Image (cartoon, rainbow over all chains, first blue to last red; front, side):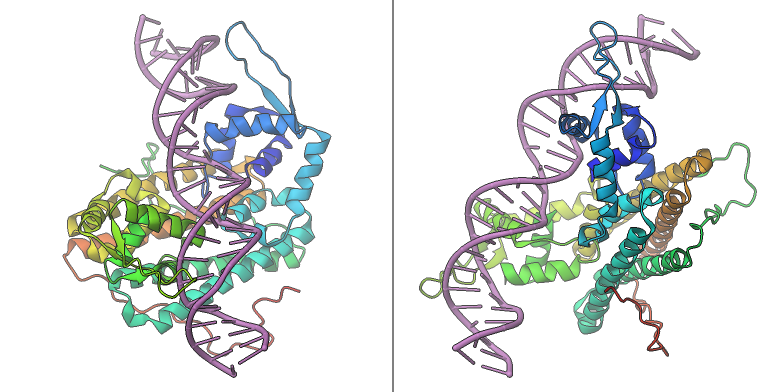
Length: 198
Length: 198
DNA sequence: TTCGTCATGTAATGGGTTACATGATTAC
DNA sequence: GTAATCATGTAACCCATTACATGACGAA
């Protein structure tokens, strides 16, 4: 997971750990965050595995020196293997997210298989929840019921999303390019205060 | 997390591990699943901690025998402490879900603080994503952009959900009791196969 | 000169999963 | 009598987090 994300980012441009983490967390931040405690050890392991290489610059005396990493040939190979992996593991919540984040580097066929697999996964889940809701409607208290209902709606929403993506993908069409949802603040001030949380 | 969920379920009625896991996975299944590999060891630990007690029935010769657990006095105390815990940890995705699942056993004040804390967390996240989207719009490729957009919409949706819940909660009103979404299958075509993964 | 943030790292720990192994009970 | 599912458990591992520690560098 982390490995794939690192390879994906480094393949676009060489970077050092700190920046890598920042980009990782804005890229995948909607569903996942990484800490240094996992990043740095992973980078070292990947270097010793030959997937990435550093300039080993121990710049300046004393300080540890900024270490810039880049992907090796082996690393590139590993990356495309990972991205092409369209089996069950790629439909899991977080794994799917990472895959999706690097779809532009992924073979169109793999993209489609991943999207479809993910959709099937979610449809199964949706049906399980619907079933539980139908079977045991009165065994749930109001909160539990609300939890199920909200969960069900989330899944249904993602299925619709996937349907759109698959359709677009099938028509060989360009990846979607729609506007992000407008924040409902009609008169936006230059101050642009978006939220007031007291 | 697992501990709280176990206490919450067992406090409603005594159960053995297998059934516990099933109920756990239908109750929390929209966002979390547990395996036996974590459940059984946890049950044993909790028993040795005195939070739950088993009937120790080594029924039948040979076989391990069904073990029914129930919450002890200490366990009940621990449960209400856990449920009342309304600090930052309770706003985390999965922790929040578990808290919510047992809201009917939770003090109304704690419920409100948890919902509000969760909302603030999500509003912060929403603003971070909006910011990233506004700052680096053209540094994202189409897929990455779509990922952000979908993530943003998900967060916005959950904020709206929380707003409704908080409003209901504030008016001392009864917990929501609305209908689960109707499956939109009035006349689904046989051609309209939703998933075919060969 | 002090604060923020850039930058790298380690030790201890957490909280689970996977895969495996065993046997009892029920339905057909 | 055999397949499914009920029921319990263990060992090995995984993939990270938390908390801590260190220090450089730029701006106020």
